[in-house]
Amino acid sequence: MSLSSAFKVATSALLARQTEVSVNARNIAGANQPGFSRKTVLLSNPMSGRETSGVRVDGIVRAQDAALFNDLTIATAADAAAKAVDESMTVLKQTVGEAEDRISPAARLADLTAALQLQAARPSDTASARDTLEKARALVRTINQASTTVDRLRADTDAALGASVDRVNSLLADFGRRNTEVVQGTLVGADTTDAEDARDAVLLSLSEEIGVRVLRRENNDLVLFADSGAMLFETYPRTVTMTRTATYVPGMAGAAVTVDGVAVTGDGAKTLLSGGRIAGLAAIRDQVAPAFQAHLDEIARGLVDTFRETATALPDQAGLFTWSGGPGVPAAGVRQVGLAGDLRLNPAADPAAGGSVEMIRDGGMAGAAYVLNTAAEAGYTDRLHHLVDEIGTSRAFDPAAVEVASSSVKGLTAATVSWLEARRKVGAAAAEQGAVVLSRTTQALSNRTGVNLDEELQRMLEIEHAYGASAKLLGAVDRLFDDLLATVR
Image 1 (cartoon, rainbow, N blue to C red):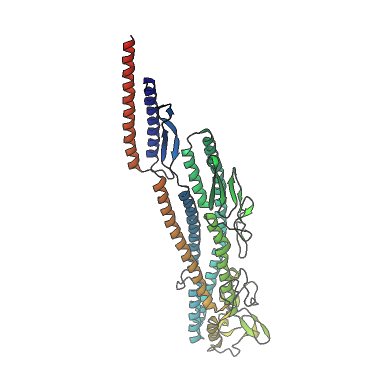
Image 2: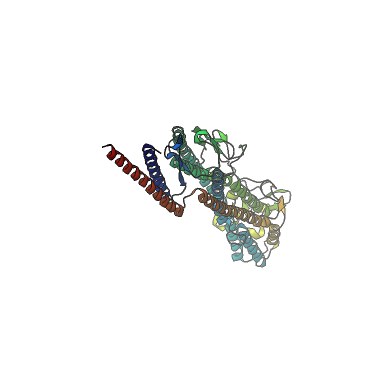
């Protein structure tokens, strides 16, 4: 090997070690940064004839596992969707509690039943009649509040959906800038590893809001699809839109979220989003909350029907419980949308509204023709016993609104609480499972692509030794040049 070749080898080796030192320092500095991937310097020894021409830096690459990263985006989207559902289900659960809780419709109805039984034992006792009235008032208030909570929850969820849509558009714009930086850097052979890390971080943030699928193209270019199949990004970001609704009433449908003009939520969507916060929020706003509202409406209708007043040759009329469509009784077996929020006590039985509490015992809230205690007997109990029996009597319910075509109002109130609790437990289990899968997938990817400080410190020592060897070679070449020049002189 000539002295010039030896000099070239030594200097190129020193420059290569300098690059390795820089990358090693970057790895150590980024060890605790989320999303940072381990960087490695690619070296080669090009040959010039039979001799090596030194050490060449071919580039800097980062550790990556495309399959695991794809799994991480899916796990992130699933976790976000499950958490959104779980949080909303908790709000609904707080409205009605467990079946045995005093705030549940089932418990309130049980209290009313007990009050009616006590009043039947003491039909002349005004205090017992007033207690029955207050128990009925508490039941109405519980159902009204639950209906209001559903409307409020849907409005809050709609607002959260709108905020999530805004974040998606912002993240897509950021992703576009990062992707352009990576593609352009790849084309000119620049180090794009940090830019790729930044792009992946944006992609993970995006997957929290909406399920994402990634297609990789040449020059390190990425194309993004929603998990429903709609295009999110290809050369430029597509627009995600949603018309917000500030106030909800029962029966109102929420606006669909669209991606590049394609609906991905709501009844009009050919394929629905399955992951991301948007999917979870849409499920609550468009499915779970309206289904719970339907149960509440049927409970309210069941109460009006159970406590209705009857008279020979006259239509049935609302009794202790009435609504804005009163004094008539809602059609049997058909949901009256919004009735849960419209349910109220019949003022004819409420002394605070000018009524008489004795009408609970005697009937006649719909007029004199509906009075059953025509003799005005203080010990009359037939009406009270009849109401207690009716609470447990099976009647028709709308199968499109609840799971059973017939049940007693008592059975339906208990079944509604159980229905909600079952779905809350499913949501909680999904959220727990999603968190576990996300944690394990994150750890697996970190093990494959993250920085191990012990390995980096060991690598630092190896670089130092290699640097020292290159320096010694350079020193030896320098001495040989000195000796050669001294001989010439």
